[in-house]
Length: 279
Image (cartoon, rainbow, N blue to C red):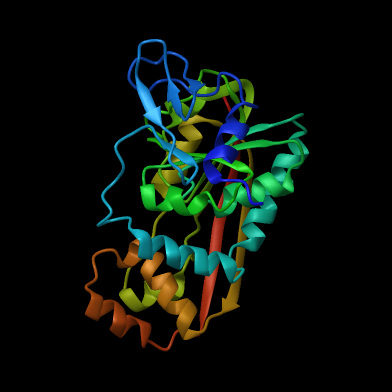
């Protein structure tokens, strides 16, 4: 008999003593029946889908079910497998025993799930402000997911060995607060040729200089790896890339449909992976 998602969440949390703190009063959260509670009486019910909401979710109009379904389709087609394997390789080389890992801005959980499966004895958490994304992420039942804001992380100080932050904004002060003194941040940002086929069609250039500058100012960069490859693209996958990409967020349904008819038959994945620790 399959275990219910809510029971899996509770079981996983019971292996992670003192991980969560209350987003209101910052005191420790503990399991009480089917909720997380603090001693001040703040209570957060655990969804039957196997996650907990610790912050007001983002607007579904911006980050709704269709966007994350498209991301799941793209990930399932293997376009980002090389990136996941590189992150796993970097993390394994760090040799943290029973590593506690946070995927900050995890979306629908692809990287969180792959990292949990690829790093033995790890305990992986994923947070995102999208409730739709987190509900879908719980398909990876070897992780602990919550709706939370990376600018105010609901985790205890110095709790994580590793934080991964992939193609999403960073909040370095919060990352440093919840990282252990010897902890490591793995930050992934777009390279200048990332999704260049879509960018060229939309006449949208990309400059990552400010993102890199911010990272170098906030953290000590141990390594900078660049991964770039181009893969074939069929129309179904093209539609999913169009649906999931911030490049097309302001396009109408009709404009997206017209874009999906463009003669784009390949896509370039060009990413920079920064391995960082505190200065």
